[in-house]
Figure 1 (cartoon, rainbow, N blue to C red):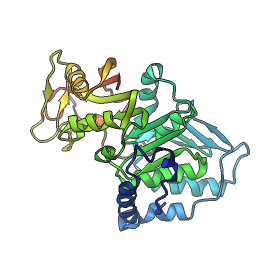
Figure 2 (cartoon, rainbow, N blue to C red):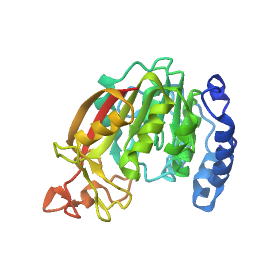
Figure 3 (spheres, rainbow, N blue to C red):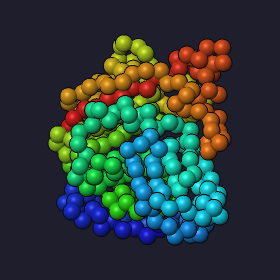
Figure 4 (spheres, helix red, strand yellow):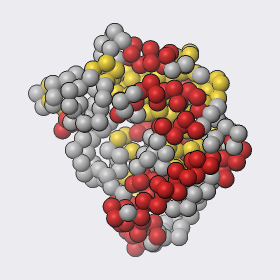
Length: 321
């Protein structure tokens, strides 16, 4: 968990600055043991030594379980430990009979993009902003050579580590890396997921250019973002918050996203989905006891945010380097 082992990149050393990435990760991984993370670290250290012999990543929920039912006390212990990683943002998961109903019904996102994906078999995949690894496991069903998750949030790293200790997927690797670390990867990824990322950062073009340079020629990017309904290439730029989020810098139209992809060097650009986000897809649950989308929309008009801006759509693109 704290040790850095980048041997899985040995076949890509000419395309990755492994030495620099290794130095970053040594520093970042040390902070996994900081005070805010100690309960999660304790859960991992005391995790039951069970390996799943039933794994199904093709269902809506990521299924990690055993053919024979585990001891009830052990199951309760696992459930208590899983709760330490709350709120669960992405899901659902089904782990040894425990159903984790996350804030996001992430299977809806996957089902929208799945018909448009290139084959992932024997491919190198990046999930930028991977959170707890839900989409990494979905990709694993297609037998990729490597799935690398980037996310700088330590809580998500710990949650993924806990899950994958049960699943034992050797070609899934999640690291405490952000979008800016993509600059140290060149021509490596066949498929790159950039979902729910660009509007959280001041310069989306930098992110998209780093994505492009990290991908192989002909590789596929899957981009998902919040959006507005304008037919013109415009972005809404909130004064302070958008849907109560201070870290939303802009909300683009479909045309604006397409132009960004063009200027970042992508081609064969296709919008595959553009619909308003509803409160069935993102909502408060017992595993995510937090304010969610319903709390951030105008109660009198759910097509507006509480600030009076247009409520978010979700826009999905696929494109090729």
